[in-house]
Image (tube, rainbow, N blue to C red; front, side):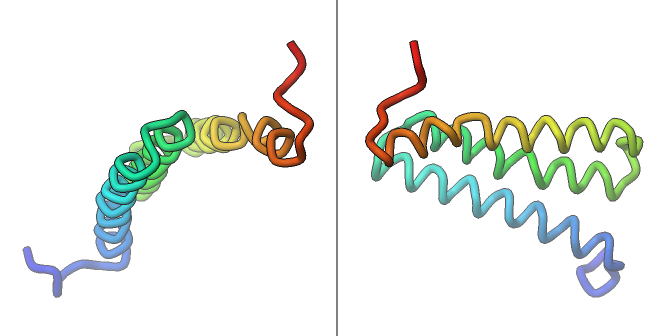
Length: 97
């Protein structure tokens, strides 16, 4: 099988796999430059997890109900620390103890 014989689904899956590799390399480079913090680990996890969900959804491995639950969990994970970042940048400190 060659790349010329891929359908649209195959091209999207290949692009998702490529984005996963590039995002992981980017997360490693950022981690080496800034240090490996919680946000770097969160970014690396999201960059690897989102394309896997896309590929599994395109292959119809995940049922629609499960797919909605997984997407909601990923969005919750990505936005879980957003209030801490906003509070730290505005000078209000961290969350209440």
